[in-house]
Image (tube, rainbow, N blue to C red; front, side, top):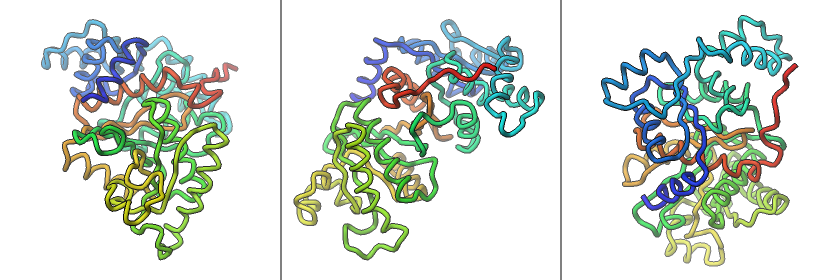
Amino acid sequence: MQFIGTVIEKLQRHPKRIVFPEGTEPRVLQAARQFHCLRLGAPILLGDRVKIEALAAILKVPLDGLRIINPEESSELDNFARVFRLLARPRGLKAMEAHAAMRNPNFFGSMMVAMRQADGMVTGTNVATTAVLRPLIQTIRLAPGISTAAACAVMEFENTAIGENGVLVLADVAVVPDPDMQELADIAVSTAEFARQLFGFRPRVAFLSYGTKDGTAPAAIGKIPAAVALAEQKARAHGLEADFDGELQADTAMVPDIAARKLPDSKVAGHANVLIFPDLPSANIAYKLLRHLSNAHAYGHILLGLDHPAADVSRGSTAHDILGVAALVGLQSIAYERLYPGAGQPLPQK
């Protein structure tokens, strides 16, 4: 717990406002309460106040310090709908459709972040990733200069020999099903920048495959060497100090003895702290296996490349997981413009 404890300490010095669209979910309510008690900032719960108060009474969770907003009764509903129509102007969205969207807590929460009424959003405990991403992409949008959104997971292991003192970052675990060479390079650089900015360590980025530079990979996996070269180029252009290597088998990336036999000159092999997967199926499978078969704490999915910070948590998340993700989103928001220069520009008002 050293890693998440450090995150909490940093956020306590710069508290943030995090909106939780699923205010009637017990795990979310408990996480929001802990967020307040740890002095991490101001949690905002969306949902029917009567239902939230009834749930809080059952769980014996005090609501002091927790802000509750019912989107359907909010004084901001009309304004949010108007701005949403402006964002969706090319699609010819009607006023009734815009209001209906803003009554959805995920759309309302996304708009709160886009309008700077919250610093970040954490959602996803009861809906699929697509139901989280749609509101975010339509309201928060991609950050300037970003063409690929992605999601990473941060894992903390008891064994400090893993990754960077027990911390390992995995991507893309939720967004791009089958990234091409360009997307794979974008994902690697975004994840490396996230790791560098939030945790301070030099990213050692391993592009994973089922073979280690053996030249037998099919075209779908053979994209990796080109993606590595492109990621190195992009990192230099961004002024990011990081090491990239691939194709690497998972054991070659993580186990020093194996790496020493296969790739003794690699700066990444055997010491990777960022793992980039060739596709979403392999990433999600590995993430879920690591999470449930080890003693690791898993915090994800942290969304990368958006104009404001947000996260789509797994439906299997505990209250502790949600709290950790909220702390990471809050920490991410502290220096978000350094991660994405030009991010957070005002939305059109007319």
